[in-house]
Length: 332
Image (tube, rainbow, N blue to C red; front, side, top):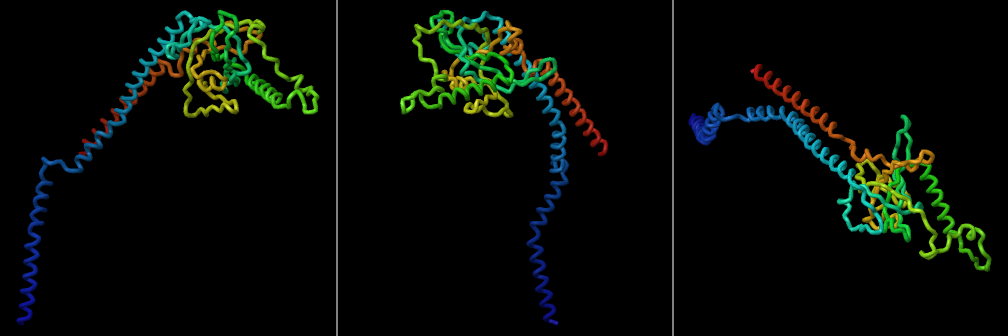
């Protein structure tokens, strides 16, 4: 009987000790329950609901920003085209022996120039393929870029070489040019005209290069007049392959690289021929249309259409967000 009482006292004491130890935790729980029941303090679920409400308006805000950006792009495009048109209306610069090439390219771009010289066809570069549509039929071809060289003893001629984009030519032009270049390289790789046994190679006699003639004995060359517009290198998209000068593969105009390949300085001026006097019997190379220089792939009216599209989308998405919030408030 006494042992039972001792056990009960022991267990009773342990129970009272545990209750005393749990008293602070019970008070904290009570305080937290009171604080959660206070309506003045926002719960985590309420803050999440508010954040979700704002997220409903995010697509509309993004669409509105894109529409505003199209307005800014439209203004920039209008100024750019007006600048080009104003430059093209200026009197052409005369690139002759008295003109200095120290001007920066940025100050010359989109200026008309008139220059005379002769084309060094052996150093022509074919850039392409570039398609051309004639009466609904698309034909592939290339732009041909050739150095315009100074004519000796001609004051009207250029005093320094110029790269000229002469215009569009059919694909057969490049094929013939590459064949001629291979034949020339084959002739250069043949043995010398005199063999070791003293005999002369008939092939070298037929294909040998003409001797070097002093400048005062150079036959007169009729200068070719080129009327064009000073341009810079093209900016290719990420889908355009890289140029490969070693294999004569040029996919876009890179003026410094083309100049190096032609043996000219990298700061050589690049001109696009816009001469409108095309011979119908011999139309190639076909010069560029000057009107293409005051056109863009995305014109100002296109930017205006994009603006209306983005603003309409912003209004529609915002209206749907308000409607969604109204439905939620009615359910409550």
